[in-house]
Image 1 (spheres, helix red, strand yellow):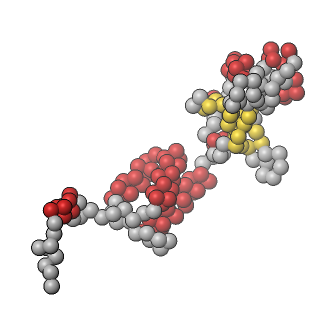
Image 2 (image 1 turned 90 degrees about the horizontal axis):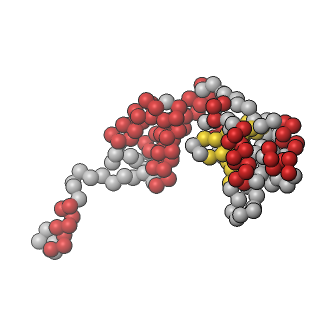
Length: 193
């Protein structure tokens, strides 16, 4: 029988670089990503609780167990439940439909016409090419971040409309001179910003 210790080569000393107490993180990449996302959502709802969650995760380093019955999965379930609980307890602030700016991004807020009737936000997607039309795409969860003070002023709306040549309310390309001047189509002008 060959002594395995005696059979070690000179390259085996690389194993000494790995500390004996190092335990690999057994969470899947998706679990790590989901935990980080949930803690960030928690931070927006309760910063102190998010800090506690981060401290717990740091203490659990190397102790996570994989699989649906593992502690990583159970921790994710608890985070999801806490985020849902805090969202339900948070008062719903409904803002006026219209144009808003948050962190330099323009959003259009409106109510769903079909189905729920809930308010939602769409993010401005500038035209891909000069002379193209600006479009809006659904921005999940943003409507909960917007506040009345984020509402676009008429000066901001005019500046934006001049830049894109589109209606500041609906995003359509403006063609009539009076619409271009006020940066809003006649139908939208009657409805207000």
